[in-house]
Image (cartoon, rainbow, N blue to C red; front, side, top):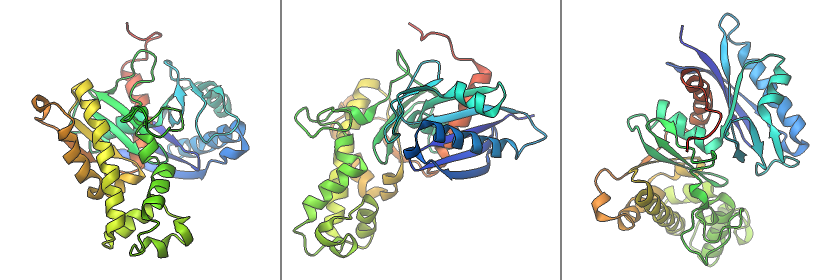
Length: 330
């Protein structure tokens, strides 16, 4: 019988989780508020609640395990989460052991970076499925990245590979949340992009964003930029094209380094579609060596948040096929 697993996408605002069948994909989904501000004990309790609710949806079938996609640094063994952003009170927590304790049973529990599981979900269930190797970029509160090589996450020497959001395009540029000057997240992260749009459009009195975002554009968001662009607002379209150009710059460096020529873009800001992706495609070719242009492609992930849950569950399925080695390969 095809195995089942629970996939959890842990976010600062909500916990999204699904019961996943290896061949069919999503069977049942639940969403709960995270209550991150109440500290790690409360968050772990909420993860346990959603896992138990989904396990109850398959009383006659054994659950192979629980996979969790989480922000922050993950250790090689996929057990601990360290310093996840937007989670007050977290330092380093063995989420595997704590969840096993909460569930009252010994079962496979694996933790992986949220962008990595989004890439894995795309590889097996989403836009990345036709491509054995690709780069995944998630555009949301921050900018996440994953390297998928032969349908598996390439994890580097300690498990932290793929941090495209912290690759710099200007060593004298603005600092991102991790203190890296000119990192792409310092341009395309939600807070950074909103601030840039506000300053750039402050004097564009013809922009409808002045009606949408309130006095001095204080309430502007990337979603508003997209909505205004759809309505023909030239200022909003210029800002999104600027963002797409920045994205193309950093992706060019990644392609030159890795010789992986397919790029899947997901996350909330990817909903802006060709307002961002068309300029990114043009810029990408300018920043990639001519001999590497063949097969170069940027693809939008259309399954949204589902790829995070699917990828988290697929961690369990891959573990059944091939357990994690105790140490990284040299």
